[in-house]
Length: 165
Image 1 (cartoon, helix red, strand yellow):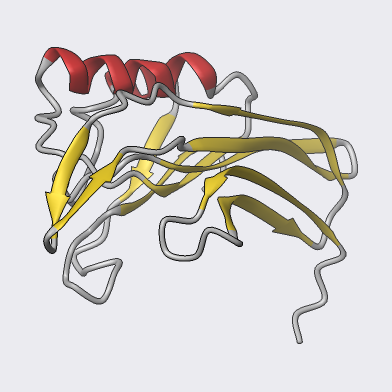
Image 2 (cartoon, rainbow, N blue to C red):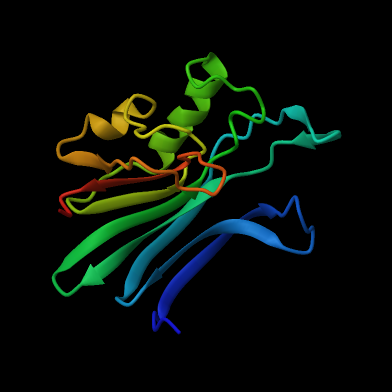
């Protein structure tokens, strides 16, 4: 068993698979966590058909905190965005840009040492073109992978960092 005694979990919505469960974001750490906050991103409240059922976007959001290493701290955020492809939202459309703008407005990267990670639901080796406000900040970079991050072969999961490597 992993011995991480510091953690937080932020529920964002009821599960679409099991209504008795909650969906959300969590952060675990073996170092102390402080200044925990959380929030929701823009929910476009649109419907789509999937496997013969009508589905609707549900709230997606983030959890954010500082992980403290003695005199230094890392600003960490875990997030989950809506499945853009499922709801036919083009990331360059007005709706797509509005949703992505809510991400940069609500999370930001304000600390010298920062880490933003999660399921962005953007199938691409890099997300810098979709979130330019993050990458316009001094020292913000992305870990790029040449392999899928989920079993279906897509690259939905991404990590953005500042001054960690």
